[in-house]
Image (cartoon, helix red, strand yellow):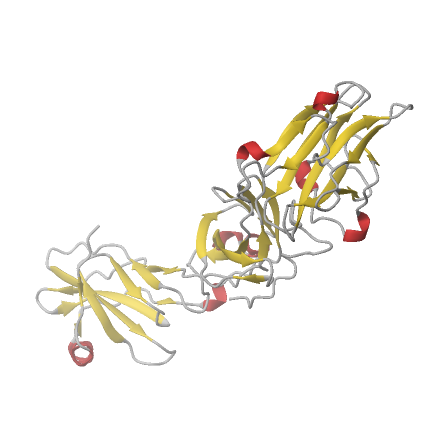
Length: 390
């Protein structure tokens, strides 16, 4: 819809406001409502959109929009328009009303007055969590903004920016990932190994944007499901595994360089699968150069999914000693990436027997980044974000 706005010098606006002759017999614009334009900064909305019902009057010339910045101040003529909407750019005034102005210089009584009441702002989402995925990040947050005022809730706004792992700091150039009425969001089309920082706000029906949730950093990483391998005694050609091998020496992770099932006799694999005399299955670290590959059990109980594997355990939890592979349990490998930074891989065993093993794996391509599914614990990078909340 095209809208015509007439911008009138402020001196003329004041004169018109004083000289108008209000005619009570003329129909007034009805059902004046407003909605703010969220900007990402709850203290500075991008603008305000007013809407009202049309007046059925053949001699209607324009609608006049009046506003005042403070309570008790006189109203000034803000603008005139032939549309039944008006967009006020920037921070809005406190109160607005609209009249119908006829071509015989008669003006209707005012419409209802709307107040831009900041008390209608919803609370910020109290928490924000994430799950690292392959080329994506799943976000979830507390739904307290909706439950506080369900009838006034519109949607959540999801923002992201860059993240420096070394400085533990989010960037300053935020962009909106999307909006959702749910308390979760899947951010897709993301680059593996590239950290991002996220935040969520709640927007009311009136367009008031809440303060932001706690900030959350996360890093997508590759993964694969249901990998079939065999113990060394069953099929040595499919008993070895390497998370990443830089085949062309460029330091970049290519899709054919990840999750390599290899001969268990190789000395450059990260681990091989073995079975002992009691038919217990073991994951044995193999590679020793440039630094030894080490393994640690993740947590002290089985995990429901590969994505349950959180930040890598503390360094003293890792060992070069073989570890028993038990169905349902998670494991984390710490290995060399050929430079000064360690690399981390996650494993969840789906099935382990003397005949074969099935597992899911993940690998963090960001050098030195222990995030496999970002969360709490040692090196809790998202929990430790130190940027100032907007």
